[in-house]
Length: 85
Image (tube, helix red, strand yellow):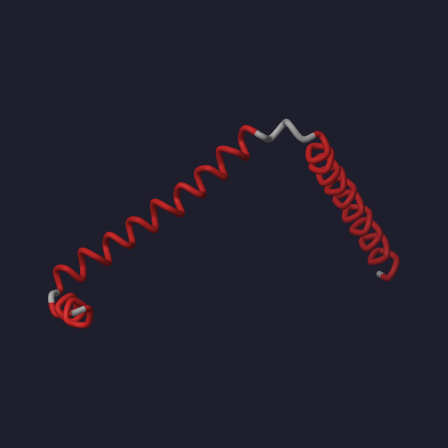
């Protein structure tokens, strides 16, 4: 009985399209709701963790220091190039 239902399902293209569309929409709703819950929880829990905020500030400070190092290296390279010429 089960094989006969599956064979009839494969023979009828409209039911195949309907079932596949339903599965696709259900998957989109499922993963979309997971993403939505994640985004909302990220927005509301942003300021509740001081360790995380300190960590984010540390990354921005490191970026400033990195930019200063790059500028210093560029100035050293330009001075070396001037000395060679």
